[in-house]
Image (spheres, rainbow, N blue to C red):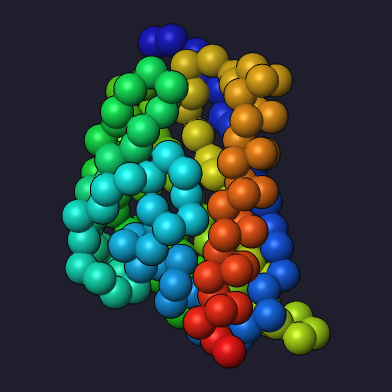
Length: 149
């Protein structure tokens, strides 16, 4: 068996809206193309998804299009949501969202885990992830705050 590496990266932002508004927005995969640059097509119900539900996503990445089949592993509204997709190119992808009420709003944290990568990401890949996350979180903040006014 080939050795693998575990990778994890978290990013967060404070959003001036109630936790439930943030949670319901980000846990509805139909919202992802509005804020996540790589995500361009989602097959799912247009609502927040619960534990055990499945959805399909298409990504545009540098090397082309990737299709992902996701399953919601955990949903504790409005605090925690975990989804997982199995891939051949990077192993499992686990994405976790947490919403924590803070003064004047909600701290939203998005954590990406690759528990069994074939090799560690390069510094350039990490820099790209961080840049894309900053844009995505900014988009979530703008979209949720606009809807919560």
